[in-house]
Length: 221
Image (cartoon, rainbow, N blue to C red; front, side, top):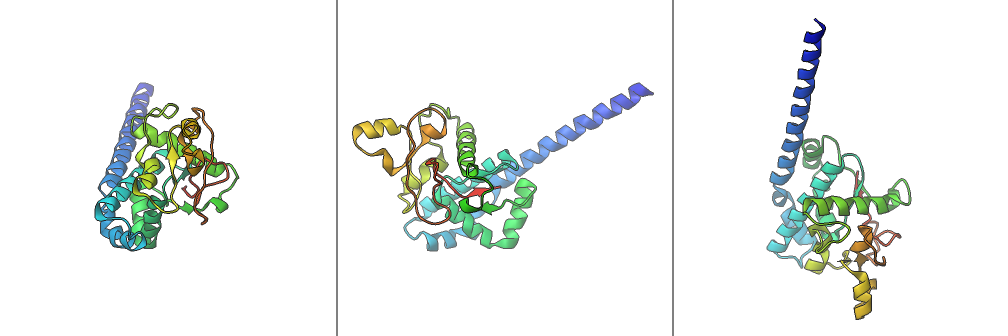
C-alpha cells in the first residue's frame, strides 16, 4: 500500500512539473505572438514622430524582449535600459484592460511600472539594471563580463538616435583614451562587472538614469 501511495505521489509530482513547464512555454509564446503594433504603433508614432515604421517595429521587438526578461526574473525587478521602449511600455499601460489581461497571460501577475524615485531602496535600480543586463546577454548568447556586442535593449536608443535616451558603451576606457568621451554614455562593461568606469547622463524625468551611473531607472516588478 505504501509503495502505491509513493508511486502516486511521484506521478503527481511529474505531472505538476510537466504542467508548469508547459505553462512557462505558453507564456513565452504569448509574449512572442502578442500584436503590440496593433495597439501601440499609432501612439508611438505620435510620441516619437522621428521614428519610421521599421524603427517602431524594432522598438516593439525590444519591448517583447523586455517582457521576456521580466517573465524570466519572476518577481524580481528588471530595470528598463531603453527610453524608446519605455515610451512604448507607457503607451501600452494606457490600454488598461488589454494591459491587465496581457500581464495575467504573460506573467501570471500584474507587471507594475515603478519609477526610480519610488523604488524601495537606493540600490534597487542598480540591481535591476544589472539583472536586465545579465538576462538580456543570456538570451542573446553574449558573455555579460566580456561582451563583444550590446543586447538589443541596451543598443536601441543609440541605434535610433533617441533624444534623452540611454547610450551604452562596450569599452569606456577605450573611449576615454581615444578622446571620444565616455561621459556621453553608460559603461556596459561596468554593468557586467567586467571592469571599466561608469559615468552617464540621461534625461531629467522620473525614468532617467540613476545615480549609480549604470543606466536605466524605471523598472517592472
